Length: 116
Length: 114
Image 1 (tube, each protein chain N blue to C red):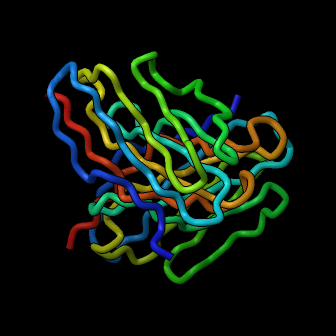
Image 2: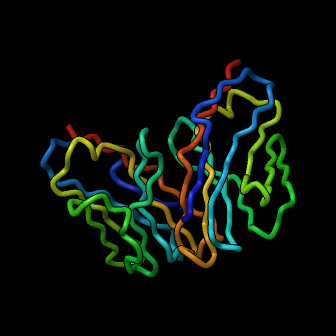
């Protein structure tokens, strides 16, 4: 079954702290795609990153980094030196390449609050 | 590009009334999705279309919900009759190509059924 689990419902940190958002996925496909989206308080969903199952290289974009580990079926997201503007709900999502190719299934999201 | 456009942004209605949500996808995108977001259930996929054809509506909660896509630039999600438990944010999203492609979301419609 295609499933994404974000066990952390809410995380609160103080500005400049590092924070990691966990994402664990389930799929029967050998080829699949993982995504992270950000939903700031304004409500729109913003694409952050896409990763395919054959590329386990970690990715860094500014203060954001992603750690993809197939062995543990995880695709975790780390924000370094968090800022108040990072406060948002973050969603991890999965799309399968063979089964259910069209669907993008989301986890339940992690609400991150960064306090000054 | 204007992005995915949804209307209305907010809708307040009374139980039993018909509600119609509208979506204009990004031009050239061949997939269109309707999602519903609630605190309890997060983002749920309701239905999606490929080239205007409904492919999977297994997420539609019940027969009160229906969706159409009469052409490549317009889709509607209708709830008839509406119930208070339908209160949620409804998102429309579109993309070009299959599951590896980025999904672009509209701003959502905040629906409140009293």
